Amino acid sequence: MSMTANLAPLAPPAAIFLARHGLSDAELEPLPADASPRSYCRLPGQGQLLMEDRTDPVGYAAFIRLARHLRGLGLSAPRVLGSDPTVGLALIEDFGTDTYGRLLAQGHDEEALYELAVDALVHLHSHADAADVSVPAYDMNLLLEEVSRFSHWFVPELSSRMDIADFDASFQGMWIDALKPIEAAPRTLVLRDFHIDNLMLLEDRSGVAACGLLDFQDGVIGAGEYDLASLLQDARRDLAPGLEQKMLDRYLDTVPPSCGTRGEILHRYHLMAAQRHTRLMGQFIRLMRRDNKPGYLKFMPRVAAQMQAALDAAGLNRITDFLDAGLPGWRDAGKRLATLS
Image (cartoon, rainbow, N blue to C red; front, top):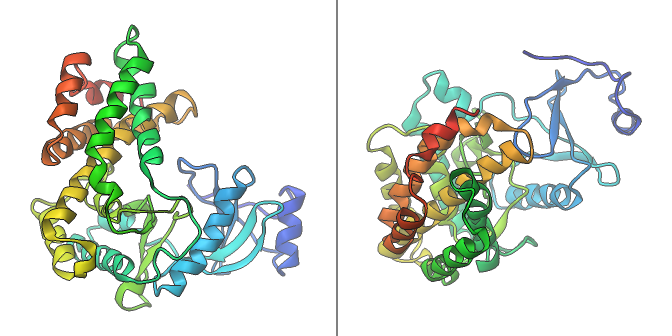
């Protein structure tokens, strides 16, 4: 349900910021919160959103920088219409309400939406200047920190007696070996959250610009297959039968040779999918236990199945054998954990 608030009850920084941009009489419609600390309000009739992020100045600055960079690459990120980093506020272009998630729920052509998103990724991964932006490297340290969330948050849910430090040391050691092909991958900009809730259809634009991009402030420089896996192995939904392979073929048929051979790209795709699902298995528990956000647990059964399938597809038998031996029940735990949402 939408809520509308006048400027009067706003905290002074927001009221002053909007007044400075000639919007002192504007109304605000809060948008649903996600897993991040950012909040957004729509300014109905203005074509703008008020973004607020007072707790993460690094993420705020990255959003502003990457929005400009992505637009310079010919992709559609929101135009920043005003910003004040001292109070974590920005006015950004409002892309409307046609998220991929909403359109798919309304019966929109699934294949057409995914083709557009894949084409946007091909454009990004093909662009010579894609990685020419100041963001962190998606290096081994960060990849390992992410899979360690499985150790520190998921594992304790299954075994209160497990020596987490010992488990994590072994787990990380296996992932170091598994992820060596990622270290050698061509570098590009990885948006990190390339999925249906962060993609929009912009009907008034053509080509890849018709794919609106949201929530890219956690972008890094790394292997582009991560975003492809985020899109095609989404925690939120199952794709129509055969669509994942069809979109993989579309990607493989159109990326330049500089991205690697078909075999190399597919192997990295499965590796990145396995790494991502492993992270999410811990991340969703952390959101519940630490941040009091249990809603993501409803995705656990799907992510658990995706993790197992990706580990198999990537040939990571050593990791699955380790989990089977030391963490009985891990394969089916998603169903139980989903009941806590």
